[in-house]
Length: 115
Image 1 (cartoon, rainbow, N blue to C red):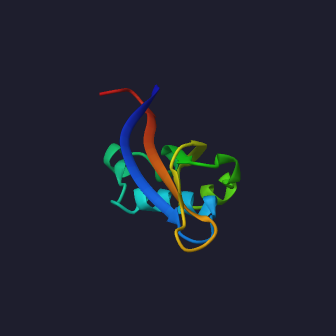
Image 2: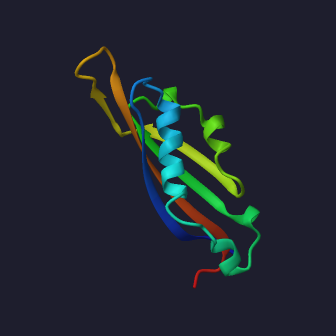
Image 3: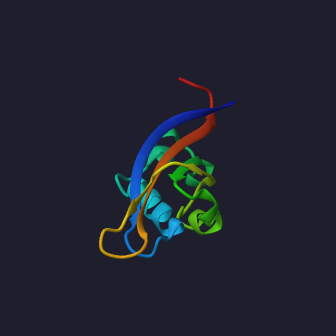
């Protein structure tokens, strides 16, 4: 058996005022997940718990993201979350601080023979 990719989905999330990198990352993951109903497990005859979920987050300050909080977003599967430098911080024009923008990519795979 081999880890075989079956789905990739993308999302974006923001923290407009609080400069909360975990919240922006959480919103990016939810944006990617909520784009569609991921029913790949049923399609291939697997349990949902067999989904291997590799989630990659990009934000300007990756060290400020709480990965344990992000793992709670996934209702099933085996999430593996990595955070790296990316996304954007946009200066606020009429106040101190900035808006945080995070990007997410979710890759769903199963341990199976490639087609």
